[in-house]
Image 1 (cartoon, rainbow, N blue to C red):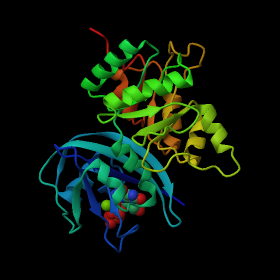
Image 2 (cartoon, protein in one colour):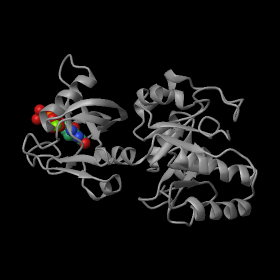
Image 3 (spheres, rainbow, N blue to C red):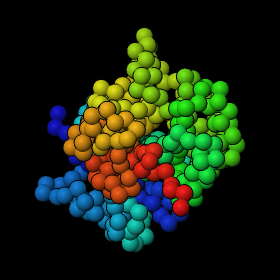
Length: 315
Ligand SMILES: Nc1nc2c([nH]c(=O)n2[C@H]2C[C@H](O)[C@@H](COP(=O)(O)OP(=O)(O)OP(=O)(O)O)O2)c(=O)[nH]1
Ligand SMILES: [Mg+2]
């Protein structure tokens, strides 16, 4: 079956609310909510197609847009390639120009709406930030002041990693961190079992991911609604993450890194190729800084993850 290329948009207003529209009952995937957009026409660039679709369907002109997530999905009757861009600025007042109902909703409300089956990773991507901070090994004072500064600089998702601590010390530390900042940002915890605190996610190592997938009947070890993530380094691990219904992944190392000096870097080209085949929101990592954020988006990534590259300096 020929794959149909579709452009769609996660459009945000000044309050960061997102516009969703209802597909006509008679359309493919009719009656479900969607991110506005449509099929690429012959000879059009992706940006041109998105501009045209949003003009036709909502009566708006895009000012600023960038890739958010790309994925393929095979419906029984249609194979589609969905290219979703985030539109952060536009002119005009968005309305259902083809008579379709439209709604502005908060990120956290998205899971309450019924979308086509292809949309699960898009709904996740729309809720995730573009930076994922991983804490460096350091003493408590450095850790706490670093977290404070990171949050001040807009970081919203933090993996609490402290490889120098044993499990009891780590649990004790995570309690303190959650008591102080747990209401402000989302923490992804590490460890042998899912964290008990309901406002946290769990970040699996590649070895844990493999072990869970190799169970006789693999089950996602955390309920939907709490983030489950995994560290991946190659196409096989990305595929395992999809099988376990992980919400998002890190893919590393893209460039040489001091944390893992012996690991062979993937390079941009190979990372890009892996992302084209992977449906999940992916943070690229390894030797990257905010200067590479735009390159990461255009390579198909959710954004960048990092220890040194995102940890705020103490000056
Ligand atoms: N626009 C959009 N399409 C989606 C989403 N999720 C999803 O599976 N699709 C599928 C449904 C359709 O098979 C295809 C999009 O086609 P469309 O009906 O929007 O195309 P179009 O605007 O060019 O409409 P038309 O000219 O064919 O009537 O992608 C989504 O979030 N937004
Ligand atoms: Mg459409």
